[in-house]
Image (cartoon, rainbow over all chains, first blue to last red; front, top):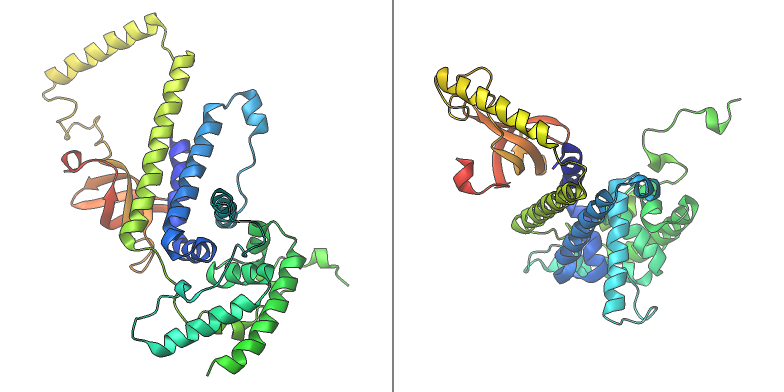
Length: 184
Length: 167
């Protein structure tokens, strides 16, 4: 295996190890805690297969039609997670529009079993996030728990930056109103 | 008056007219989120590396089958003659190519080509795990090349070759 190929492959593994917290948090919001690890693994292995198949057809035509490498690996991984979660929903025959793709639940948080105060706070945060529109919720989850910048959120969701800003400001305004009463 | 385009870029792209709501973000971040257990993380990284190795081997096999890398017969014969002469020279000069590490022409081969490293001095003791390549064991220390430069390796959580070849 050439160095270039190896470096390209290890980029995904290294990228995962570096950003696993944000990736896991977003995966939990997409498919739930139990399937989050499987979703992340599925996406990473698909990325390796995809780059290998492109390398295998690296002739003049292949090189010309080869997509440009992602500008931002982290945003690209988040977008791949999202697309794969949509595939999983289609395969499970979940009808579009019945439930939102990105949802918030207390399972997102690592809470000690006997910590009642933390559990209450987690439920309050999850309830407040659930009140937002799906687009607002996804922008805020990617921003806060995924650890992305606004530009990366825009790339991950394939939205203009202005739209992301609008979802964010409206979402945080609503959350402020809800959390000010709920959080001690 | 300078236009917007003349201004120097901001250090981070969060400053482009979007002001994060620190209070709300602080409330949302006040609880830690779940993360995958360390074993599961290493397992995923190992699977990704192994998959890439298999894909790379398949791709190189495909290239050989296409005939692009097949060596002409006369070149193969010449290579055999050169190898035989070098082998004879190595035998005469006292030691095999693999075993004689004092021979200045023989560099120690990498122990592993990739490993998941828990800590490296270059990134600090609290740094997240990284992937290192071309891990060697020299003078009592593991060293390798990480994504952001070389690193001294504190401990290795997973390695890409079986233990029999590792020692």
